[in-house]
Image 1 (tube, rainbow, N blue to C red):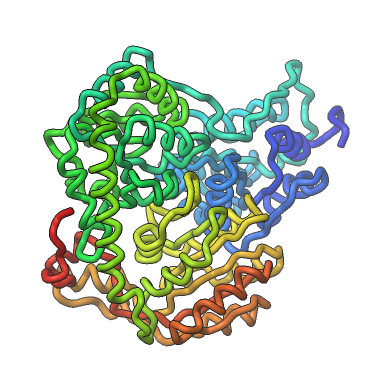
Image 2 (image 1 turned 180 degrees about the horizontal axis):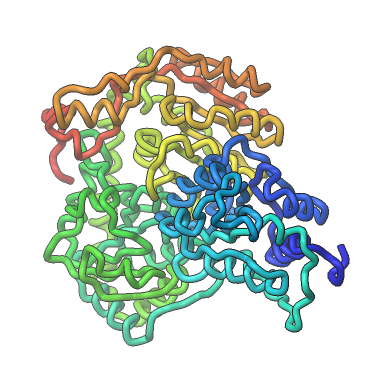
Length: 576
């Protein structure tokens, strides 16, 4: 491709290559851009529906540490990008969306599939811009990547008029050579004075604790958090999105808390540790409803220190000492500062603290053993998670759909190392995104296993992407919790209203047969004793696999919402 005589579409492709883009999630539109990209070695992964393509890009960005690219046609295709971009926006995931627009002379004339795309994407993107001239192609592409990967990450949308893509690109007077494909693009940290103040607070605290959110899984943050955990002798809780940021076998790791603190949960026993905290360090957390159990977790008397890349998130729900910066940089600065403090009191208390945390994990194992080890059919999700746990390696990535599937993996599986990845769509928590997130994650790390855990309700949104897996040879293992109900919907309605709507039950579906019809290997599992063999076969096959597990319709995660309603009060255990 000659730089001096190329089209706008070809110059866009070259700019993408400069930013290290290797994959575009697309459906051959905008065709001029995709043809140009494929010509220079950028792979197109063709989704079946734009909603799923956006989620694939999300999963790829989370796993790879690179800014993902998704592309779509104008009109109805563009509208389907809104849900996954909204998830990425709320979850702080960088995605660049290339959206074809109608030809410039046809704007505002009711052209075919014309739509106000700026108005459409503005609520779910950090930046929405329309490229209008052939002389600023690199400026606009670079601006989209910088918007997506700087500050708080998120989506950026670049609208590309179809006629402009066919024009000859004007060679710019000032050439661009920078690459902005990895995120975060900028590393920022708070002032020395604020770091010192935070170190003083933690060192002087009687019972400090950490709550790690999704920002703690960003590049370099998990390792920095682990160093602070050990250096300052701090117990670490995580939110749902923060799972994986700490090794859950570390003696100071308290697992996921959030709303998972009902009878039978780990949080039932560890929450008392947080209740007693006098200083809480928040790392990369939006302090959202699920992550704080409706803003009830942090004691009102506790001092709060908040690390976040977004200054507007600090103080949104809790007044805090403001440490504005990316998690990795700020945690490293804080760890260095705290090493100069007198930590002998914390060190003396560590043995007792570790004993209390270990006792909480033991009690949790005892509580869930009642159902986890039972040979019941239909199969309890806790038993499915037990079998999956035995097949995990420290390099396995586990991805879940929204709703109960997310709760089963974050509440029942135990992370094996610092930085192990558990990916859940918790920005907006839309159904159907588990499978495409897993596809994106596998493409980002093809050498290691990726397992998607999905409910049958959510999986119905994304069945078609089984064909994408097969056609593109993406070896994801999919576990379908096939219980014939919308579990959360049914249980939440029952807890709140004493009855549930008619939409909560499905007709029986053989997901194994659907998968086989797409050319995907599959098996239907009806008894607990069949799980180990099915998982072993699927995880070693190095090809797309689906395990359709007939699971218990009455099972639900131990959410605080059900405490005293669906859950029996007699399951409540004494405090650790």
